[in-house]
Every structure is written in structure tokens, then in C-alpha cells.
Image 1 (cartoon, rainbow, N blue to C red):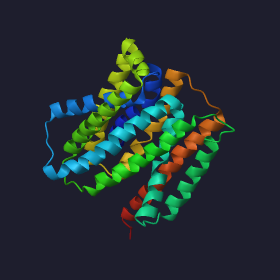
Image 2: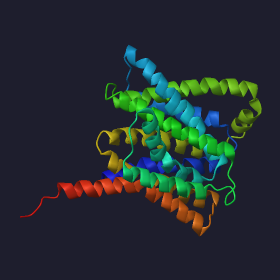
Image 3: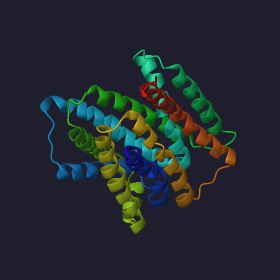
Image 4: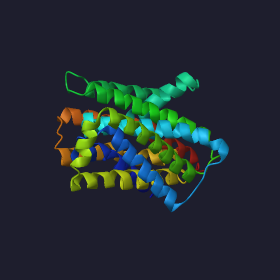
Length: 297
């Protein structure tokens, strides 16, 4: 049951890329990031008002910059420059980059299983992103790598809090602070390059509104609330399995909304990357259950 619940936010996040291209193709990424963050934070604040302690403002500001302002902007750059399936599948490489990060920074040596399947995932990604096989926007690829970096650094900071700040306060105020920062940056950018902003807002359609509602209410308010709530009630292993819905949603939404098609070989590489990202957790789960199984006789 926990795994099924974890699939809900993962599914909505996986649709971000296709929904953005389908309903908001010409909107500036900064504007989309600000609209996604600030209204969602205000809604969460209205649902359950909270106020951080004086000593917590600095850490929440860091999280707002990394997890929201930077990450949301990069996600929408990806959404507007890369195929939905590629964005969704590419993000499953987060555990590999996290493993390398903790190895270099914290001297936490990965297990042999993690190293093996991490190497397999990198190899499959190398084949999938081969420029001779598929043409991808380099700006989108750089944005993907930077977004993965934001997830790793932001997660490390959040974990270091050790429950010192209530999860609802973290969720609400990182959205609010990140949304305010993004809104200010967006205002400056709109002043310097007003054409794309004026074009987007002056030709607002029902399709645009539906896309924005999907991103704000489902992807952010519901998705992030469920994500943080579930993290308090389920194991990382369960949540990892639930995350499989993210790349699958990216592939399916890209197929139905955008008409994306890839070769059977490319789909096989995508499935291989998803499987490689899950295998260390599957092996860990099997081993733990075998150890917990009582020995007869």
C-alpha cells in the first residue's frame, strides 16, 4: 500500500515535462518556476499556518534557493528543451550521482552492488544519450545535470536537519522563500526581456490555465505534501520503488500528449536504466528478508 501511495507524487512529477510542452510551450522557465512555487507555498500556509524559529530562517533560505528557485527553473528548462521521456528517465540517475557525491565529499564508499549497477546505469545512459543516435539540446542536458545536483545537495541539507524543523514548515517555507526569490528574478528578467513574458500573458488560453493548475495543485501542492508526509511513514526502499512511476509517467505522457516515439532499442535502454536504478534496493530487500526469516530446526 505504501508503494502505491508513493507512486502518486512520483507520477505527477513525471508528467511535468510533457504537460509543460503541451500546454505552456512558449512560457519563460523563470515565470513557470515562480508560478509553480509561490502560489503553492501560499496554499500550504493557508491550510496549516506555520512560522519558522529565528535560527531556522537561514537554513530554510538555503533550501528555498536550492530546492525551489534553482531546481524549479532547471526543471522547466528541461521540460522546454528535452523530450519528456528523456527527462523522466534521465532523472533516475540521481542515486548514482548521489553515490559519487557522498563518496567524494563524505568518504562514504559505495557497496559493490551499488558500484556495479551504478556502472551499468551510466553505461546505458551513455548509449541512450549518444549524439549519433539521438539529437538532444545541450542546454537541456546541462540543466538536467544541474537539477540532479540540486536534488543531492538539497536532500543532504534536509537530512542534516534531523527533524529539528517540522516537515510542514520546511515544505511551506522553502516554497515561499524560493517562490519570492524566483518572482524577484523573474521581474528583473521580464524588465530586461519583456517580449516573451508579454506574449505568454497576453495570449492566455484555457489550455495554459489547465496546465498551470496541474503544475501548481497536483505536481506541487499535492505531490510535495504527499512526498514529505510519506517520508515520515515509510522506508526509503518503499519510496524508491514508488519512484518508478516518475520515468514511466514521463514516457507515457510524452507519448500521448506530444506524440513522442523512440526506437525499440531506445525504449529497451530506458527500461534498463530504470531497472538498474532499482536493483540495489531490490537486492537489499531480498537479503534483509532472508536474514529475517527464521531458521527451522
